[in-house]
Length: 449
Image 1 (tube, rainbow, N blue to C red):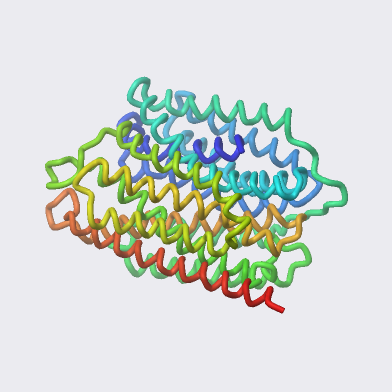
Image 2: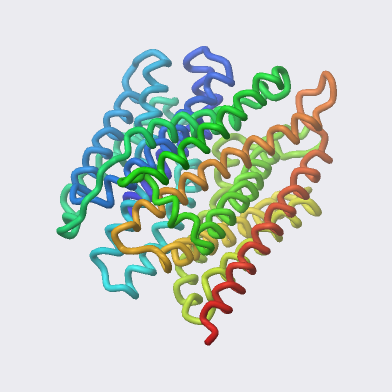
């Protein structure tokens, strides 16, 4: 749980520091944005590879080597080096995002079944709420000691994580075999790079639509080629046939659409809170104070994560997914209807946190119910790739809607653009809810004699 929290918090460090990086390194905000994008890209690419390695006999060595890369990257972000080295360090830090699925594999292999289910649920939750922990701390350190001090927090935490892993993690059970499908890994990496690049480069869609559309077609073709490679491989990077199982496919669909909605609301609230009052709305909060708005998200997310394992004894995991999606939809509805008071933003963020916490805690149960122990890391890795793509698209969709709602010559979008984006989010969570209900109905009919 500690390792999952650390890697999530470190990956989120880019968000509150974008403006500080642009100022300190004398680069544009677009260039500074890559301190976040680079971490997400490397994490998405590394996750399936680490998931496959984690399914083999060298899981402990894989975890330690990955954490060593993260620590080295953290050192690069602290040293007084040019901007390119900072980006390289952030990319190395992002590799750690692939460790969360491996932590689930460790829990499932080495803890009693009932206890492992609760721990896996909490690992899933802390991997999400880690952003709410890292954001305000990084913003405070940046205000007090500058951007290098904020990244120094990452170096300390990752070094502690490496020491903890070295002392605590056991070896994988004997008899495991795992070979990495190199061709599949390269093709999937290329496809994910294109998908996440297109999601992050919003200006490309508005200024060079033909180029963006062409790259999107290339990404789709690469994904199709990857599926063919995996189906033909004797040692696939991801067991595509298992992913096609209705429960797993439905869970990944819910994660994709739900991830779009969840990150969309997170983006809307934090951006709205920092908008100067001169725009006719907003609160003009500093980066640090805006980070405090994430506290309800983290606290209630953790509460939901603790409550979900108990609720699973009475309520099926797919129904918990559906219920959590309804809660997030409620956060969207509240934000759309009432955001003139800061307390209302806190309430919407609290609903988002509680819904995301419950959703994240229930998700592993849906997938692992039909997944062998040996494939835990691989199956959850694929789910986390889907989540990363969903989150990136959620951020991009929010940016596009707000950009479309910004009048000529205006710096900030109209207030109505936030309402439009919130209603899109309600639609996304409605689809997620229906997917969860469909999974629950299928499971119910499947268990009926």
